[in-house]
Image (tube, rainbow over all chains, first blue to last red; front, top):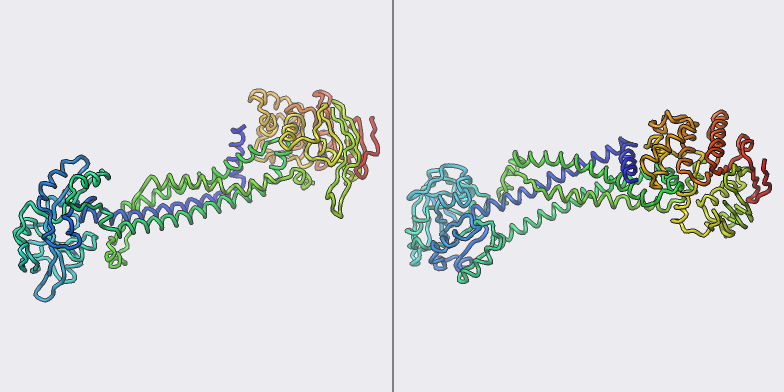
Length: 403
Length: 226
């Protein structure tokens, strides 16, 4: 019996082929647009988070207690090198780096600005977060007297490759000390803090400049896969302050939440369109065939079979719409992922918020599975009112209407 | 086989436009009968057919089908009765447009759970009897009105119901097709032994049947066996 019902449902779908095609097209187009928007939003957020992790704190960062509040060199991790080695040997840890950071004044002959100097091991940073990929201009080289500077800070101080600057700060003895540096490279990390205020030097040179020893650092940053590593580290190093990326960057969490809300609203709107589309086509289709259903009931067909038939009809429309939308959406997502969307005309505004001018999307299986589940649900709910119409149908009235 | 005792039915009960549709109907239909409910339009013949066919209920009285009272059955039991014991032929054919002639004829058999082989064999048998065996793969809209009505009759008879209820089956047919259809139904009545009840005012049917029950204003005014 169900084979016949399936056949009837399938054939009924093509009884008004233009109407059905219109709804399928509507579902496919709206769904593909939704997938594109979801991929773009998530791509923006993930790209920003990924670059912030690579250039900044990684997944987890360790500091001496009070350092994040006081930002003074006296709150540094004394045995940072040993801790780093221990952490690197923990399963799930992909990379770890030491950083030494000091706030001060960066000056040229004409201008000066607040800045912080970050001492780092360039090779280690490349392993940690492919730092060389952030190079916008110049070269990625940190020898004695060399510095790499954030793009926005370079713009503020009107610095170019080869420009000379002086960075002044307090060393560990409390003396104001200055170092002359030559700009070798300009980087754009999309990490606002780094782009606006950072000047990078070799960590060894910074130790010599500040008077710290090579065992010390103000931050240990870790890239890892194990989400529970932070719990182990908190137990292992109780003397340190250990924070996850999102704890250190609550704005990123907020941005993720905002993107989730945007995506949910888009999803809701599109699924409402799908629901209304399927409901419309099913309602009209049922009204068109009300006599047919009346006769089926008269000759002894049970309501449950009619219910199954109507559900299959709605499901066919939904699934064909879904498949078309999934293919179209996958093409759009692949394009956005590989080529990106060029928003160069808004680049200043985007960079101010830490986004790139060319935004690359992302593709997740969950986009397709969630949409599939929602379309099945929309198909189911869209037939409730048409079914109610049939349930209340009096076959006598239908037969009378024949005459 | 079918027995009606003191059956009364009203339309719009309690409203100013109340209509007495069936008045104190007492009637017995035996197995294998070929009977017509006749009378002017609005006399209650279709209503009587619907009440017998468990499509409609009645306000008072009792209806028995094979000694079993059916007037008090719930909707589910009435659906089962219609499916297993009765066959229907309507004025407007009412075939399923997306199914082939073969599938339409076998539709009720499939609802009743007959096997594919049984359905195939019986559909061919009935289609041959009704001379539509060459149309089995066609869709209903490719057939003439007379052929569509024959498919409707075949659908009604295929599952071997005890009784077929035919409401104005020739109303949409020309005289030639009406005659062909009546001859075929008569043959079915004789060969298959199925009882057939018509509701019609068609003279042609009136001449073909063995018993004519005439209604007027919802009451039986004449019961004539010919």
